[in-house]
Length: 186
Image (cartoon, rainbow, N blue to C red; front, top):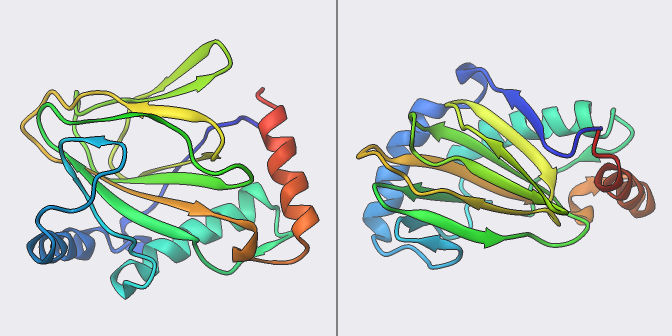
């Protein structure tokens, strides 16, 4: 299984237009956001409890259950999720997520030159050019960074993690699948 999995989600299964209006509300309530790996831009607090993202979350869960777990395990939810909004000159520094985690991002809005995502695997770099409605899934242990947004348009990304406590099934199966996924970069 390829380490970075790419899918495209239908707008009817993501509620993308409603999410865009929810983002305006979230930014109004918390204009500073939080600082994590973002250099400039806006990073939301955890959104797991926000029901405006339920349809998108369910679409993500369906993709993972079908394509990563082959229905051998069933995901019950996301561990955490957040929004990143990068405008001109903003980027995200190199980082990774927790071991034994499935991580991902869904591109709510992006344009050409708004910042590629780079995955650093051993001594190789895999560059992915983002597209609106694209979902990326990858083992959380992989280091990645986001290049500078060179446009005046916001690049809006919904990011998330899935951990073993988010599944119905045996932990050892989850860990086995994630470990095998990490080893098999084909």
